[in-house]
Amino acid sequence: AGSFQLIVSIFLDRARTTVLLFKMITSQKQPSMWMCAAIVQSCLWFFLLPTVCRKYWYLFASYPEEKAEFIINLTPSVFYCVYCLIMLPIYYIQHPFFEQYKIQDKPWPWLSQSEKGRKAFWALTKRSLRLATVNLFILAPILSLMKIQTLTILGFKGPSFEADDESWPSFQKAFLDIIFLTVIHEFGFYISHRLMHSCAFLYKFHKVHHEYKDNIALAAQHNHFIDFILSIALPALLALSIVQCHSVTQFQWTLWTMYANLDDHVGYSFPWSPVRWFPLAALTDEHEFHHAKNLGCFGSKLSIFNTILGGYEHYTVRWNEKRR
Image 1 (cartoon, one colour):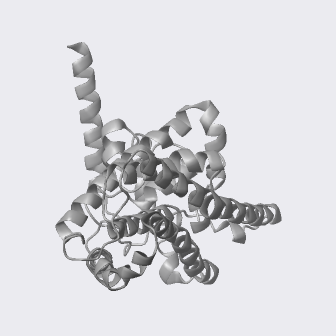
Image 2 (cartoon, rainbow, N blue to C red; image 1 turned 30 degrees about the horizontal axis):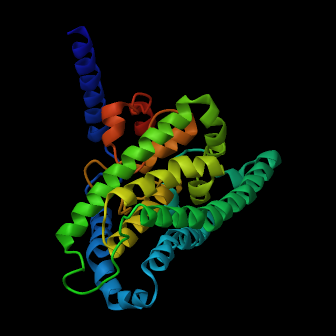
C-alpha cells in the first residue's frame, strides 16, 4: 500500500508540473498567425508530400526493394545539409526578426568578446562537420544496410514501393503508422538518452554532444559514433522494424524526425515550427535547457515520457519565464 501511494504521489506531482508548463505562454504554443503557418506546413507534409511522391514512386520499381529502401534512408542526411545551409545566413545576418526568437540571452559564441571563446567555437564547428560526415554518410548507410539485411534474413518483408491503389496507404493508415512510429521512437530515445546520462560509462560518449551549451543546427549531429548508434540510430531502427509501413510513410516520417532533431538544436524557438504546435509536442526550449544545464528534458519530439517517467523536475518555471 505504501509503495502504491508513493507511485501515485510521484505521478500526481509530475502531472502538476506538466500542467504548469502548459499554462506558460510560449510562442510555439500560443495561437497566432505563426501557429497557422505551422499547421499549414504540417498539412503540406502529410497530405501534399505523398501525393506528389506517388507520381514519381514508380522510379523505384526498377530497383530491388532493398536498394530502394537504402536510397530513401539516405534522404535525412541530405535534408540535414540543406537545413544547415538555409540557417547559415540567418545566423550570419542576425536580423532582429529572427533574433527575437533566440532562446538564450547570451550572444552567439562566434561573437564572443573573448578571442579564446571565438577560437573554441570555430574548432567545435570543424569537429561537428567531421562528426556529421562520419555519422550521416558512413555510419548511417552501414546501419541501414545492416537493418535491411537482418530483417531479410529473419524473413521480414521490407516496405512496399508499389504505387497502385491497393498498395498505396490511405491517409488514415499513414496517420496511424506515423503515430506508432513516433511513440516507439520517442520511447526508445527517452530511455537511451536517460541511460546516457545515468551510466558513467555511456556518458563519456554522450558528453561529446554536450560540448554545445548554446545550440546551433550543427549540434544536431554532433555525436560520438557510439552515442549516435545507441541514442540516434537504434530508436529509429527499432521503430521502423516494428511498424511495417509503406515506403512513402517511412520517407515522410524519417524527414519529420530529422526536422525535429534539427529544430531541437537550432537555438531559436521559431513559432512557425511544424513539429511544435500540436498537443503533447515538446518545445525547442526544452532541449536548449537540457544542453545549457545538462539536466532533465530527456525526450525530443513529445512530452509524454518526460511527464510519465520524469524529466521536467529541473525544467523550471523561472527558466521558461525568462525566455518568453
